[in-house]
Length: 350
Image (cartoon, rainbow, N blue to C red; front, side):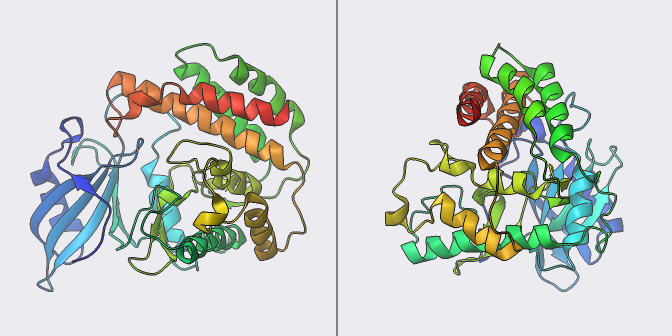
């Protein structure tokens, strides 16, 4: 039996017309015969994600993943599943591992929201960086593979894969600061002095180096599929925040776990050596070797920027939880995350 992430029955607030989806797939998914079964993955806060199993013309069952926009009033720049579909389709011909994409449906009459369909990739979702059940050697290899895949992504030529217009070239940090400051202001539920300080300080202190690559935007262990038995990454998931941007922001975000104590991002309180995990310095050095860099200046700025983004994202997750339209029932529990992440960010640069 294939190994996939944990699923649950479709949550009440995310239910849709399965019969309508079945009719759509009969006309749009090659090899589809019917017998559609739908469950929901129990992880994720943003775009609801579903496991689909169906009969195919070869007599076997096919396993797929459906990602759709959530219900309710949405922030205009968020939940762009069409961008997710575009980037994984473009990266299919590169050495960046992604799930094969099949179709994008913009017709809201089918299930109520835009959605796309991709193959379900067999493997493990390891949200806990301590990776219970793995040996120290396996943990080290998985972290090294995570590092390698990120470096591979940043070395892809956007123009060569048809993503030259996937975002604007240059000034990524300035644009991101404007976007997340605006979204935070729209969704804030309390005053957080550290966020106000960051909103004022970060735009005035942007490092001069301004490269442009494809960036994932939420690159972390929990958004990767690890081979069922081997210590290597076989697919990168959740491309909602991907664009053309600054690669060091992607790397810094990937390293936030070294500074946070709470899961799923944090592992600041674990014994890295005992677990076989690299130090932050060693992890960054490995990325530099793979991308031809000697060193990284202003590292704390990139960390603070990433924590600021994470604080703004957490604010949105919490606000959706209050409104009852999050894809994760635990969203309302993150009420303290915006303040904690903002205060940590400010402590790195103040």
